[in-house]
Image (cartoon, rainbow, N blue to C red; front, side, top):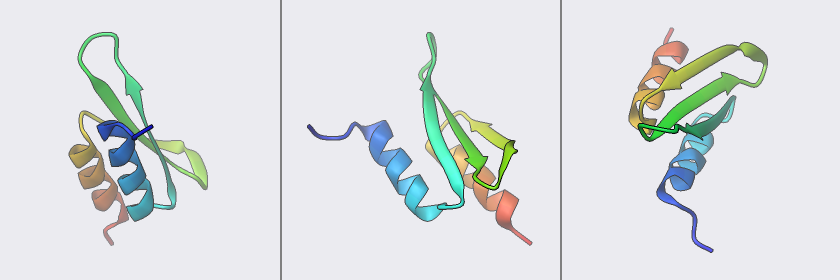
Length: 64
């Protein structure tokens, strides 16, 4: 069984951001909500409208 596009996006994000737990939540109306949480701090959570937006937010969190 081939992975769906969202599953491939999650796999790619997890590979680039291993310190984050990354997943998506299907919404009843309106597609997917993209989420990330630091493995070392479960209170640090990011939500985004797309995988690209999630990656932008992850990059912003790791910039010095």
